[in-house]
Image (tube, rainbow, N blue to C red; front, top):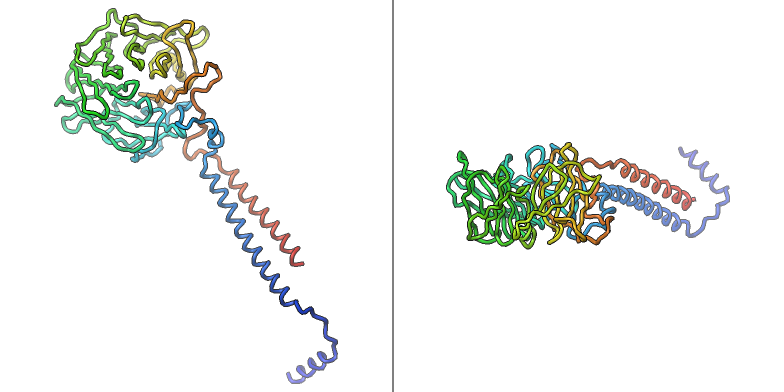
Length: 421
């Protein structure tokens, strides 16, 4: 070992020292720092690309399509269809303003929110799955339904869809009731209802001033499955078999004779006209309550075949919104029309489509239909795209994020080698 050390010393003494720059150490330190910075930048680039992909995954792709065209207050979807059988109900009823409400094929209560077109199955307390009493207010902010009797008390619950809070209204009748139908007035101030006493054929109809204490009830002979409510508290009632009557607060039943060709559907905002449910046929009917004249609006030629026509509500004093269901079983259409044909009449079909199955007890927030601008190209409903949870193709987003990360790493590797020589 001593000999080897001595030999190395002699070699070192014989070799001429190489010139070394005075700043070599500083340059080495700087290169090390650059390497550390590039490593940090690579890590940040990977994190950024993954985060970007995650944001894309969480942001519905329909937002880009609808942001500039969706009204601030929301819209009615162009296509109203059933919901998947495995869609989980939500007990949080503060889902927001709704555009439509219906009962699904699984007999579950559903609302579609106006801001995004997403369907929500609601876990409504004491909701009776066989009930027809289920109605959305014209502004889409409140939902009313007939609850299962609590003991002997029949109840109607009105849910504020923006706050999730509920108001409960009870009937003064001590017997157990089954609610047959609910109907909001055009301004959402009154809620009409019909019911049948369990084990009896006696019908009871009533009206509730929503948010107040005013209620009234009228006993009627027989079952009244359809009704309409006006903003003065009046009710339009239809019996099985076609009889129709008007009941105003503090007055007796005013029977309409001869019976019009349809059942009570929806009062106009001023209460002067009553749109009628009718069919099968190829026309819509409206009753002038004051003159008792029946107004008729035939379908234009070569449009809809024989159909069942059901009023959904009034867009304004002149325009009605009908659900028209062809008898051949095809999907229904929303149609905007005037009560009769004249110089200013309107008939707009294909405003929206409604699936023939999986959608029952449909009610629509007619306040969300925009004012007509007089052009046939105006869209009165909105295409929200695919809003079904879990059905979105995200593979392209993941692939794009990975490719971006690889590209960033290759660029940094090239830059690193160039800087370090």
